[in-house]
Amino acid sequence: MNKKKKLLIAILITILVIALIYIFLKKEKIIWTSENSLVLSKLKISEDEGDFDNLIKSVDQSLLYYSKIDQETIFDFGKQWCSAADMKICLEDFREKLNKYGLSDKFLKYINANYATFRTATDDLLVTGYFEATLFGSFEKSDEYKYPLYKKPDDLVNVILSEFPVFSRIKGLPLILRGRLDNDNRVIPYYSREEIDIHGSLEDKNLELIWVNNNIELFFLHIQGSGIVMLDDGSETRVNYADTNGHPYRAIGKVLVDKDICTYDDLSMQYIERYLKDHPQEIDDIFIYNPSYIFFREVEDGPVGSLGVNVTKYRSIATDKYIFPRGAICYLETSLPEFDERGIVKGMKPFRSFVFNQDTGGAIRSPSRADLFTGNGKDSKSVAGHLKSSGKLYFLIKKDLLKEKKE
Image (cartoon, rainbow, N blue to C red; front, side, top):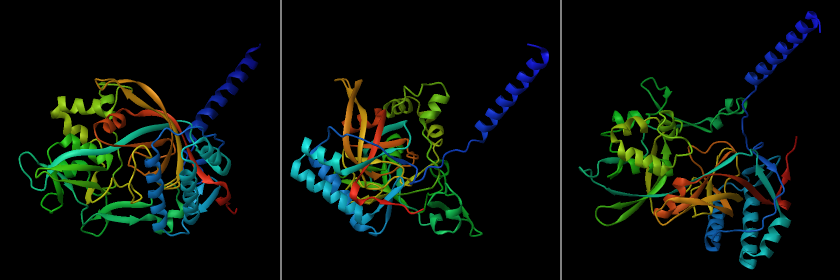
């Protein structure tokens, strides 16, 4: 090969490499919507490993949600849709057949024949867990109970962006923007975790709901969103998510990984708890890495999910509320940790079960995340803290209720 041809080939290869680099750098990040996050997919359901009574409870909670909203509310299933009234009909059918056949082969055969299944649009679904925390507290501040749960502040402003004309023109905007008004009546970001917990931005505003005795447990309550507080007078009360400061959620485990203290494979809630207890001087710096902050309210019953109805042990999941049909029937395939008598993870066991999309969370964004509610108590905390499995998630809807979207 002569020098001229070699030079030409070299130039062509260089141009190709530059073009590929340009395409890679210019490649737009996918903006997930309710229309592109689910894909029609075949699924044959052959088993359900959950509790029957809890399944009925969870069905009833979704029915309660659908009965409280506008019956013309639209729920997208990929390129198709149905209304809240349709979703209610679907759930009533599911419940009727469940009571008639039980969790039998006949029931599963009926579901497979009459229900369409939509798979999440990403293949790399990460399934994690959450639980209802238990804390110890008092309505009075003391040397023992000195860490506050704050109520929703009066100066927290929620800007409903979805009601502004700009919302339809710019993809990716959140439905709600949270902030506060400054002296010039401008909406600015609300106080961050550092401003609230380190600099006392909410002190002397009569916002303390309850005082608890453990700042580590309190931090994880912010992540779980609901909990039971055992009070110093022998009674107990339930607390639940009321609102957030609007700052993005950032997982504090990344701090430990970035410092080469551990790897992502090592991470669990239990590992992080142990590290914080052993290094109390680092707690503040680690906590403020997550600027997101949760405000609480007392509730009589619960735990309450983002739909305003109760979530159910191993039957409720949290997903991205902006893209998936809320309250819908789902089928989850993943694996759960198993423990030996010392509480050490000894392996993973398959978990295949009907679940319901009844909650959301600050870390739950995109079609690649799902959070399984594991209940209350020590065992629930152990499973949730160690659950970090790949999985598959399907959304179900009765075929005859689906409607095609008009172009």
